[in-house]
Image (cartoon, rainbow, N blue to C red; front, top):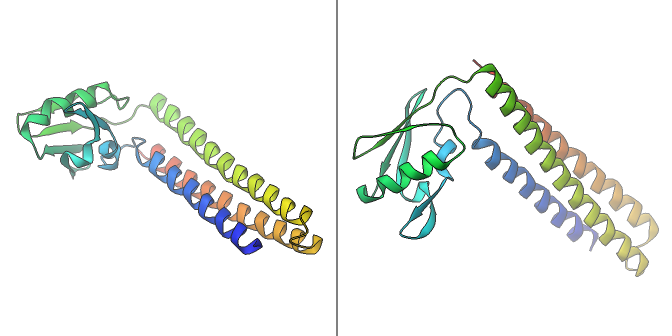
Length: 185
């Protein structure tokens, strides 16, 4: 019972880490990365569709992304979605492929991105702490219902705190790595 609760907490904390990594992948750094636009939603035949399902995205050069749609008719929809996004990039359309030139980041934009990285990392930390709180409530409920002893409760809470510390540390290291990437000129 205690192991099940801790296992569920571990899985939910892993989910928070995965979500953070996905969010940070979309934050633009100085170099081109297909992850920048992969999750961008394109209005395709009336349905919002991720761009990764509509096109091949590659980074042939450090400051260039190319997007080659599977259906040439969707090129205008993809271009419209890129212009509407908050990436601040202007697509160049040659009829068959879209090229996105990634300009170098200004110091001001780097600082904005740093704040964004820190904010996303804090959201992930809050998510991990919420998982800890929910699991603690479950464990205390088990103890109130006499399903576990008081000693088992304290041992489980210690294990839960160790688990929380482990995931908070992982979030910190992911955040630091992304911050270095953003500051890299």
